[in-house]
Length: 145
Image (tube, rainbow, N blue to C red; front, side):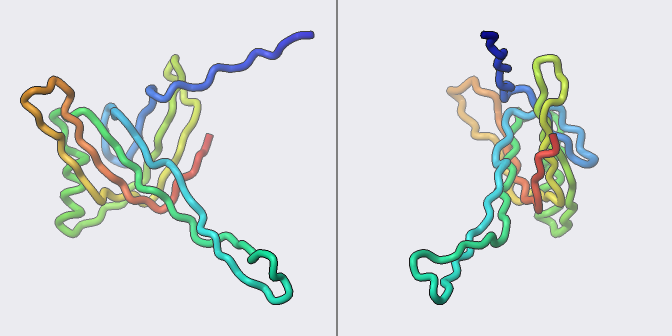
């Protein structure tokens, strides 16, 4: 009996983030790629054992981007625009790559804008990389491939 070869799962450290008109080379971490559908419960007459359950609104968690602080300030500048009252929404993608750099999965998000910026925690006794964080609010996340 022949055994089927089980493919190795993809590693989670080889990815990139694409954003309209922002050229940020690398990110340390991306999280928040999830969505939840609210459940609406409705009691029906004559059906007393359990309520009927229907899908409600879909809610998307904010995307959290973390990167090693460098000389570029494009993402901070985008957040600063929002602080000053100019909301510039952008579309983007999170792209997972295999070991050869080939795209294996893509999640597209739409109408995003930065709701929160966090600067690096500084510590004179540490040799860690300074990490900046940007939290993106968006209106939809779709796995394309």
